[in-house]
Length: 417
Image 1: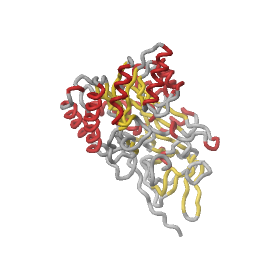
Image 2: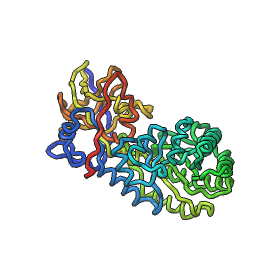
Image 3: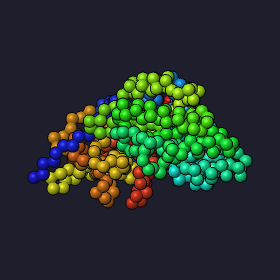
Image 4: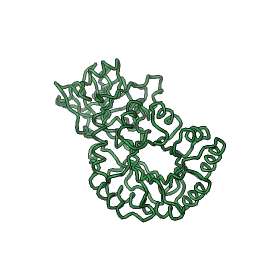
């Protein structure tokens, strides 16, 4: 007989409650939201949790610090419309994201465009929309200047820098060493001089050293090095930057043992760094660019149990969703070792778990489609609703929704009345 060893799950984020055993999302029961959507699987985003997250972040950070939302984390249009009220700017990474931003009514002057492979078509669209282009190479700069001249527009250009340091302990390192992202720090000053002399609207620097760090000390260290770097580069360029985008890197606690980021430590430390910044940066604005940190905890993925089956002494709870919607929760997006996201039965949210752990698996014909491995859940039955938490970022938009011909998940923003 197989004895299945329980594997830990991440902690359910604070703020989720239940009523008569039913998980509440934006004040509504999960089952009622499924009925409203008409089907599962379903992503639900809680607007009030998003508002609280931004408010908490702003209260912890230095006054006057700008906040940009990285659309790649979640480009759902109703969510973007809400974020328009809450943040100072938006960062995009494709012409497709630009189109969504424009359809949502976002002004081009509030948008910056990063990405190492911008096509001429994308550069043209960004220039026409008045978007700031974060240049990733000298060649891209020349193409942007040429296209702008041909269209008789003054380009809004910033330089994305590949720094000579990285964000230690980050889940994904974006700077330091040889990278496809940004212009190496030893060439960035010269590029800034070039675009300024060409008459471009010089918008400043963008430095993104890494992402998904839960180490406040490492983030502060990277911010200190960033401020020192952009001061030196601004001296080389001969001009103060209107804006310094410090990047992000703020992580969220997905897994067992993860501890939330210490915002107070970062806010106090960053305030000290900005107060002591070099003179050439005295009039510069500073911004954080955050994606998952703002939206991850506000999202829940709901998927219905189709079957509960036994195989060689182990129990498999088979659901109608899977990695084609929630690739990250399956362990196939940005992780080396598969670990469990927070998971629960939405319709038995306060019930005690069964004695034996179970596997929660998706509907796809691949062994990779596993949303919960050896997890503790109350006894599950056909028709129950499984909730996967931390689903507000890199869910629907970062998963292979067309894989095996299954339909995309429905999305809802709730609690925004």
